[in-house]
Figure 1 (spheres, one colour):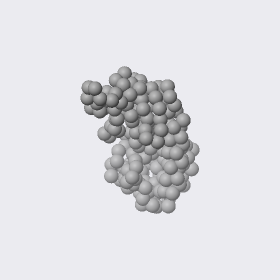
Figure 2: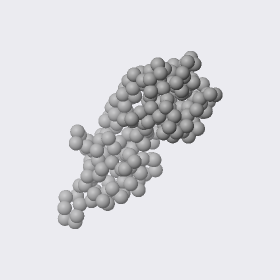
Figure 3: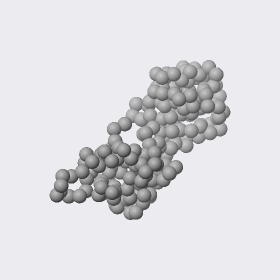
Figure 4: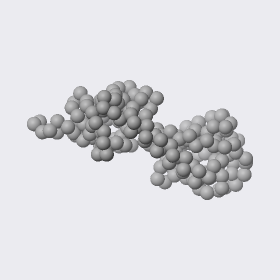
Length: 196
């Protein structure tokens, strides 16, 4: 098997629920190295030859790998030609441990950001969807122009533009309209995660 540089397991959660695992200390070309094919459906392996998953998409720079219970995005440059097919330079256990560690760190950052008065942006950061009124184990109450709404705690993430929801502005407005109580009822509503 080709000798790989170490793959740094620096994982960041993306809004789409895919975990991005950027490679460092690896050739930074956008494309996969010569002899490595990352077509949809291709099985990819770890450094020991264990199956990581299959390629579900490839945009020419990154490949999304379906691991069964989650999807991860790996830079195409992080693959090499293994004995069985495309492979990365870490074991599945190392990759899984790195993903779990980064998920925990990302969740801790979200929890720290969910404080009363914090502004919450839409999925793409183009609009403010509300401000945090309160957050607890049952979810997060946002104050919006339509009243207070409760969202599940897993509806939030930290993006370049700050604390964000997993809703676009349009999805958020539609969800509020659908969840809004009838006239004369309590003013708060509960909003579910958007469909992916």
